[in-house]
Amino acid sequence: MLNIEDGFEKSEQICKVIENVVEELGINQKLEKIMIKHTPAESPIDMNYLSPDNTSLDLEIVDSLENLEGRVRHELMHVADQLNEKFKHKDSLVPPEGTGAFRRYKYLWNVYIDSRLVKSGKPSYDTQEAREKEIDECYPELSKDLRKKCFTFLWGMGLLDFEQISAMSYDLFSTFDELRFLAESQGEKQVTFETMEELKNYGK
Image (cartoon, rainbow, N blue to C red; front, side, top):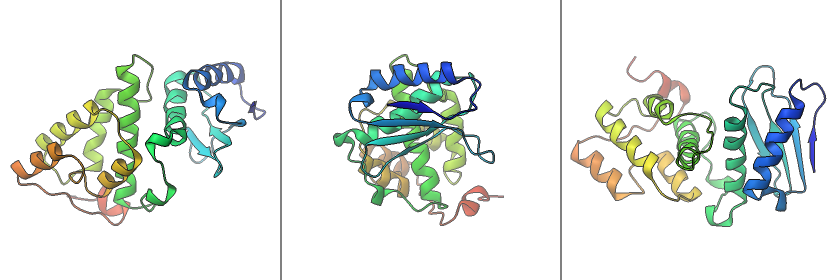
């Protein structure tokens, strides 16, 4: 079921961690094949690619022991969410790549995953502090005070589904009354960024 490409220096440790987390999450009961691959040289970031029929998974893993369990758990939590019918994952709801909404979609899902890992006492990809700093990149048009309050709400949320994450990617204040009231009380609105360049260069 689990295969790894040749050339990994840390193959034994990587396979062991992945096997343990896959079993813990129950992914091994839903997937027929997992292939561990090298990350592209131009983009050394862990990634997961689930097949359209949800039977096989390609995992691109950085060949390093640095926060290995946290990185693996994060990627496999993405997969576990997609395989969970209650999460209601739909490719059609993913915002177009290269847009501000896509950047925010990735951020919101990452926060949802890391917050659950931290709360359960498991290693995560990023800490609560790191994720809180990252919100500045995703919502530069909002005041620092509102960003902090929004992040506190996002980090403390219970269960989410993909439809909610997708909706919030376009409008952070569209799904939960608590966030909408926060924005309205401070008279702030979200800006729609059609491109990543617009988002990155906002206010410069």
